Image 1 (cartoon, rainbow, N blue to C red):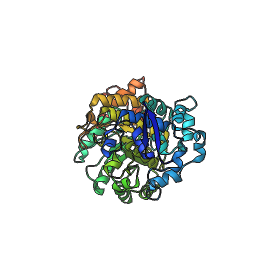
Image 2 (image 1 turned 90 degrees about the horizontal axis):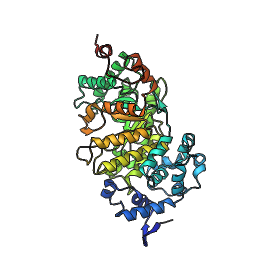
Image 3 (image 1 turned 90 degrees about the vertical axis):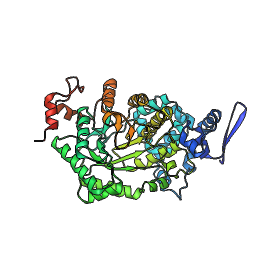
Length: 460
């Protein structure tokens, strides 16, 4: 099959190949316009969706978007495909697959069994036919549970990353932000610092500070300095207390090379972290971040639309059984997601696609200051994601990251969402909050008592 077509309003729309069809079927976003691959009208976009809906899912098994011989991500996707898991839906078209995902038959157990049989391109394709409500409904049925020192992804729970960044990696500034977050019950997914530099000694210093605070107060969580994977390997070789290995990843081999990584270095780091045996309730040791537009920004997109490439990045993550994966949905900028409408749609897409592939998805609900978005928009996306069953959200002091210079969620935003939707932290972390006297009798987190504050700020 060399091309695709659909007739709409007596006009025949043709699409040269699968890449063109997927790109034109995507909701409008500035990154695809920048790449010159977006549909040039709403009518053409609808025609592409009509043609895509009739495409058999099996078509993706023999028609790759990035050549197998040139791209190790494509090889990973093809070589690891589970045909037996795919069998229950193998007879469906993309449109029929959407209908099945929204049916009662596609329950949590069925979706978990199906995940290894889904290729990222199939998942990207079906979500292009979904409304936002569909993305929320399907994702809410997916349950992905992981563990290290806390158990994440359980029903009725919402995890959080405490992000205490500081522009000079000042220990006191980071510690103050950590205290602020802990008092709001934030940090059960990870306490993760983006270092201002990628220095091995500085990374070790930050890790040792995290470890000292964690062990002093017996906090059941995991720490992470979000350095480059090669830096983290060096830190482990020097005996640093590494819990999680972090790395930004993308959906093509060339884009990952732009990040300075490949599959072999990720495997080396995973093996090294597993060898430390620092987990207590599980052994998921990897933490990945992604974002729509990363491959395009590296000129490594191969003419493929940014959402499909984002979902291919999830195939990379899936291979390493991560504790955490999150899309930094609005961080890359308005060149790729122009305004709040595009950011909200992308956040819901990324979460749904990751969950369908069996990943423990979180979202950094965020935007840069030159995007057409504001904090009200982030409130909307946060609430939609909470309803969709997101595994964790990221929070920073005052919703303003003073080191990375972008806007995210605040500690009280996540706490407020937990109260609104009756969601709780990870069970191990919740038990710690209770031991520290920070929970009320009904399990809520009121302003801390004086005795609790004394425990957390005492240096004696």
